[in-house]
Image (cartoon, rainbow, N blue to C red; front, side):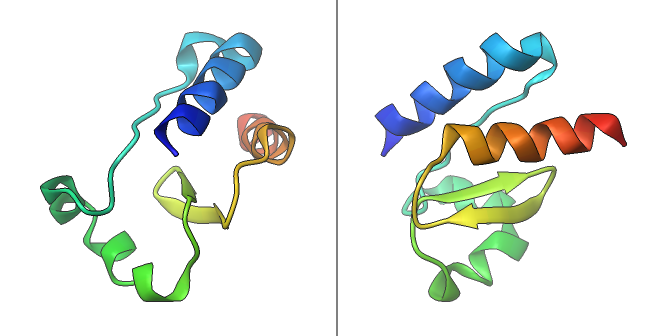
Length: 77
């Protein structure tokens, strides 16, 4: 899953530049303590889970196109 995430990161940086802040978080790691709102929903989602601006947006797969579209919409706001 981390490889897919890195591919997504490359895709987003290529399309949106350095404005993209990306973090891969292993849901089994202690890093999850920093995301209590995400931990609370983990039993209702399928991994991978994509969170944009703190909001869960996509789960069960990574679609570079769908995620890019969501980021592009946010950039317009």
